[in-house]
Length: 168
Image (cartoon, rainbow, N blue to C red; front, top):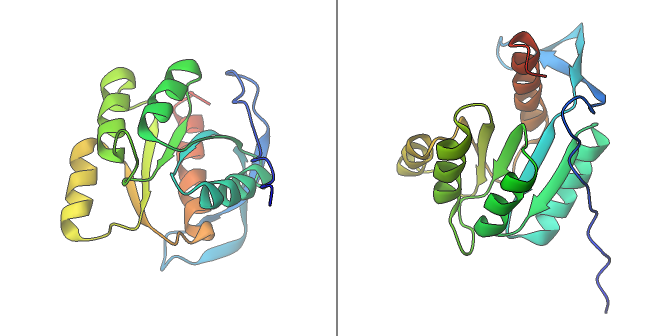
């Protein structure tokens, strides 16, 4: 049986972003308040996961939310893609072939500093895994299966912080 082609996306250059509307949490118990929606700039996201099907589904959801998404399926490919087109956010699995997610994060931090949000999306959630992610330079750590609402709120915070800093 032939597998359908994975959706492809190219990341836009700076200034070529569409808006994505999300509802932003009021940070009280994780609840959202009606009427507190704010237009959030779309982000350029690099999604890195060796599970091709999971990456494709998450990429489609993120694209439907207005973001530009490119996917990589191993650590070396992720580093190469970052060199070709810089992302605002990297959603990065830890257990990757060729280079693990920790090493990818260290390389991105070494080359680009703190200007890119790094989010671990992994099945590894023990205290030692959280420490290792922080030491490698991750800004956030989400455990699979990821709650898409939680990811959306995290991305909204990243986008709004970029607007507030004048980098969006």
